[in-house]
Length: 249
Image (tube, rainbow, N blue to C red; front, side, top):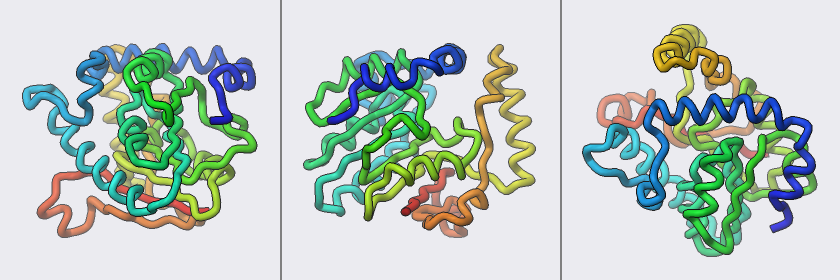
């Protein structure tokens, strides 16, 4: 792969302080929420013990993972994949199991990136510690870019999608999974719930880094909703609360 951790660090060194501020806060919240996993637990994700505090949540993510992997396998061609906000890397590792893929997992959380690099050792898989912006992958292209449970940490859907489209190959696709989207009025209430939640954890400032987006922010993009939790049948018979959206150039 063309990009190395050393190259990325050199290009982005000027943003180190701001990156560390968010990272330290994010790691502290993850620890408080009991979302930091042992190496053994990480290797098994998205499967967790039935008594695990987040068992129900992981069952949802297991289903969304299976849908994504099935779609990627159907492409039947070599794929260069970028996961933005990969966290501990479990989904990147799953995508790297697809024959013909090269996968990069990107995250600003050094603790989980280090763990991912240690646990998931595959020739076609690389983990990079950095933010995602216009210069992160200059002069590179990806066939698939994935935002799984990470879009809510970007203040503008429009900005981040344009940045992703700039490095998207022809016939490429962006996938957004495991992400809530709100009606504009609901977003106000959701924002207050987040503020109350992070305050209860002792980290009220985290709410300034968590954003509540709506589907209307995709207007102007070539997007398609592959799974809509608000569909009447899904509401009646399903228990998956997250949208699955794909965006092309």
